[in-house]
Amino acid sequence: LLFYRPGVQKQTLRKLRRGQFNIEAELDLHGLTVELAKPALNEFIRDCINRGKRCVRVIHGKGLGSANKQPVIKNKVNIWLQKMNKVLAFCSARQVDGGTGAIYLLLKHNR
Image 1: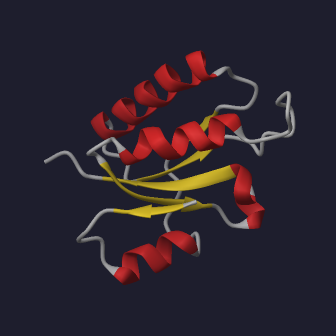
Image 2 (image 1 turned 30 degrees about the horizontal axis):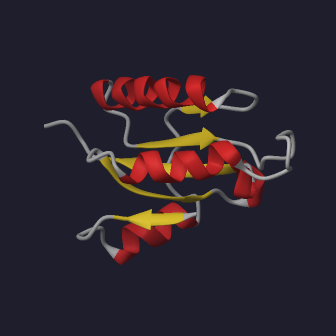
Image 3 (image 1 turned 180 degrees about the vertical axis):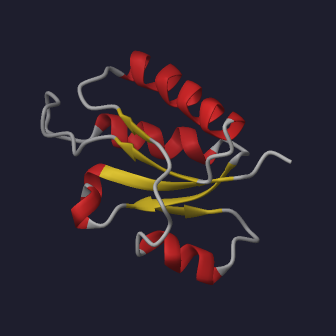
């Protein structure tokens, strides 16, 4: 996955993709249904923004446990995050941090 808002500098995006930001918080959505994952993600992001967190990781899984072995939560997270104004950018994590089963997420500062 890869998403970034206009105005996000290429250097910032490059650092995010390389995993060069400190991960300040993490949310694991493994095994949750869509109905449980969405409010959990919303609350996590709201809490991170209120606590001044800049870069976080969300583990959505690869969909291997779903009925058709397709990534349900991953696809929903992609859609949900793009609609959140406080999300500046996100991308799939490096293999050591979860690979295509996780994302690095860059949040807008509360000022």
